[in-house]
Image (cartoon, rainbow, N blue to C red; front, side):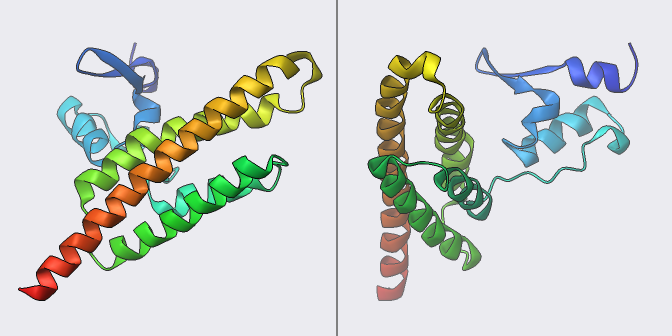
Length: 169
């Protein structure tokens, strides 16, 4: 097959594990995506025009959209904390103080997992046929939000340590 058909059927693998379809990989890692396209000599006209949301603002916006429909107080409060922490990351990124390797891991690993579970929860929570699964989904979501929040706090602490250490010297 030629052109777009080939492009749409390619998968991306890392360390032997499937990551995503090539067309979707752009949202995970734009730099690597561009490298893949360059190495494979795909034309630019094959690339989607959709901007990737691998930044704090993109995730804050998505989280806040989901949070408006969530009645579960614990989940909602944890998500407000996530948004607040991501706002701090965004400020540090704009000032050039964040560790891009760590924020990339946050944006490519932790946040997509959270967003996927959050999306599934929002789709399931009002379905009366899967009400027994909703409780399990809520527990899983809360644990995931806490994990993400702890990862963000660690990232913020690392950036704060960097700021302090460079200020003292």
